[in-house]
Length: 307
Image (cartoon, rainbow, N blue to C red; front, side, top):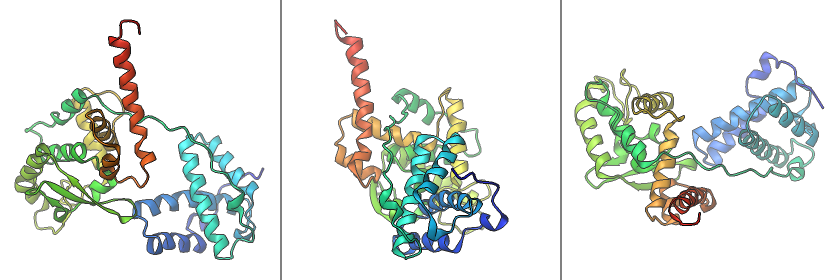
């Protein structure tokens, strides 16, 4: 097995062949910026490995792929992270072969690893209620934080989608928003009355003060009037989770899981949920049915006379 050493300064910059592939994903395939960034991160690590092992792009072999995957495993990456790296490399290798850079179709010899579908961590409804009630009026950013938490739970949006959300995409009068998801696919999501009320107060009272003389269409703003980024959204959620006494690890994506789990538990149709979440394949949405089955087991064991 080839052992990688510390990459050179030149290797730290995306190679031209990698950059052309990333441009192809963004321009021709229409992938979202966040997705392209994820590809860039994975492929940069792969490229560093190839440079350190002195492997030319035209000579990449199955052994090189396996060597890099073993290195990722030795670093302690999770199975899902390694699987994501593998998928990135496979698409990249197919592109190299189609461009006649790679001599052999190495990707055809690679079999995608089977992954366990992990059950998403979702909060109990009472915990969500406590989280949504955690922002206090005395806080300078009370209106923004309350609006953000209510919107994440009301719509099941990804944090990247909430970051990119503009004021023009939200229609409070009709009670819906227009969301641009993965692959720049657009979907319409209803917004409940609690989120509408919270957003209305934030837009009327706090956002103009945060914006000041700046010009921005971003819905959620930081204290400096700039668009709120995903890191600060994560901090907002964590801050109020601690205030609500929630000790389990929590992120904006947890509220997406809660949205899906609670809708299914309330009797929502799986296909409708798929549309609301923006999943391309219903099998991705089906993972939430296992969460509901777990709840059924708990109810069965609690109430059946012979559990």
